[in-house]
Image (cartoon, rainbow, N blue to C red):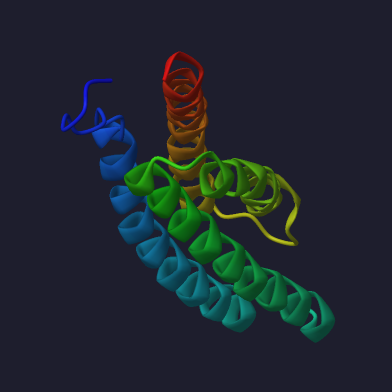
Length: 144
């Protein structure tokens, strides 16, 4: 690189847009799940132990998702591999939790199937874009 020329900008705009949309979608998802738990606890024979377990897991899921989106955005915007790799690593627990709420919780409503399927589509696109971002960020270090 010649002296005085700025380094190329490799941040992925589609990844940043997807992370922003996912943060808004997950906020709505979290509120919808809380409301659905209230609905299920009132109308279905939900044991208190199972309800408590599902709610605690939902709040843990919220924490993991906030950290994952933060590191994904930070890694993408700063063009750093470590935060993006952390985000990619936290994508696995997030996916497992989405599958749990899609298939394995005590009572699964049709609305939950739909919102979790949309969330898994977000995760699939983010996985692809995170891998592309890591490849782009690694290629500049090798060629630079």
